[in-house]
Structure formats: C-alpha cells, structure tokens
Length: 345
Picture (cartoon, rainbow, N blue to C red):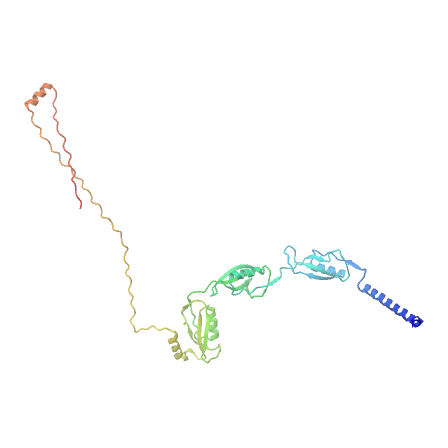
C-alpha cells in the first residue's frame, strides 16, 4: 500500500493538483485586485457650501458615486446648498465609492392637512398648530354648526383634508357663527326637483322629505306642493318637504286642497273678530302737598290818647314862684298796644 503511494505517477498527479490550486488562488487575488482597484484610492473632494448641482458634477468627474439627503430644511442656509459630506472631505476612498451629500432643500417638507372639518374650532386650531400650520384669518359664516370649522382656505382657495401643504404655511379658517333667524322661505312650486333642491340650498335651508306621486325618484318631476309654504319665516337650516309629480300643479288642484287642509291653518271668518280690552293706565300718585301756612296779620297800633292838661292851681303857682325855676309839664308815655292773639283752627 505504501509502495503505491510513492509511485511516481501518483506523486506527479499530486504535484499537478497542487500547482493548479496555487495558480487558481493567485489568479483569484489578482482578479480581486484588478476589480477592486486595490491600492488605488482617491481623496474625497470638498464640495461643502457648493450647490448640489456643482457637487454632483465634481463627484462625477472624480469617479465617485453620490447619494443626496434633503429631508431637513434649515432657513439659515441657501436652498440646495451642500451642508455636509460623508466620508469627510480629504478622506481617501476607492474609485466608485458612494459619497452621501446632506443638502438643504428649497423649502420646508410638505405635510398633509389634517381633517378638522366639522370639528370644534378650539380643537381644530390646536391640531393645525401641532402639524406645523399657522392660522391666519378667522372668517365667520352663518351656519347651524356654531363654532365648528366649515372650510379651510389656503391662499384664498378651499383645500380638502390630506392635501399636501408646505410646513409653516398660513391657512384661513371658516367658522360657523350660528343660524340666521327669520329667513323667508323661497317658492319652489312649479320647479323641477333638481332646481328646487338648488334653490333651497342657496337659501340656507335643507331639503326634507320628497314624496313622488308615482313612487319614483325622478328629479325632473315638477314640485306641486311644499311645506312650509313660500313666504313663511323660518330659521336657517330648517327642512322643507316637497311633493312632486309628472303633472302640473293646475292638474293637481284637488290634491293641493287636501294638503292645504292638513298643513295650512285656515282662519274662521264666520266668527266675529275678538275684541280685546286695553288696560287702563293709572296716573302716578302725586305726593300730597301740605297746605300753605296762613299769613299772620300784623296788628295795627292803636292811636295814642292825649292826656288833658289840668289847669295850674294856686299851690302850684306858689311852688313855681318860690323856687324861681321854670316849670315843665310832664306827660305820661302812651301805653304800647297789645298784639291780638288769633287762634287758627
């Protein structure tokens, strides 16, 4: 057995096999070196602060691949400006290596408008601000949905939910201010059902039940009766019921009279009109005034009575001559009159 292993033929085949194996390995490494440019590296060019178009042209000329990332907008930099390069500029890479460029986009990334229609205005404002939208003008419009969002306007045009808008855009919000009061109901008798619906909607009412004479739903049928009637005053959003037929209202006079007896209140003119009395308005009570105080009469002074002078007697003369002085006649003063006392009853 061992002799057969050392036979020259076996050894020759073994050497040939080893040589073939070594040759294949050497060829494989040489092919890899050629294919991967082993030992051949090129520096990454510096394209920071250049526009993305200039950076792509430079990378193409250098023999490098590129990948652009423009997901985040920064208003401090110019649109399409290269902000970052990976690998960093100056790094040596092989030919054909992919270089990632971080580029500032032209504007903010678009966002989807959230569905806030028919939502309360306070919650709608919060939702719009959360997604990055600004609320501009608030427009109030008559509607039965008070304080609810009716429409969203972007640059004066109505936009639907899920519409793509630039981030931080300004939108106007239309909000319901409540229903209008005492609106005259339009006359839709004689119109087709389609025309009547359009007129009712324009008049800020809603279409109620539509009863077709033949049981169909043909909108070309003519409306021959409506409830409430034309000219009545109702609030916005009230429903108007319609009766339609293929015949004209003149041909359905009996049907109209029957409906009037059901939906219209007739005024009984046989009874005398009711007379209502008016409440007498009593004048305001005046405060009792106190009677004026009687004037006090000033008593007139009584005339003074003069006292008669008695003739001088001989004794008086003697006294006068004895003293040698002049005699003076003394009179008593007149008494003051007493005031009369009046008793006022």
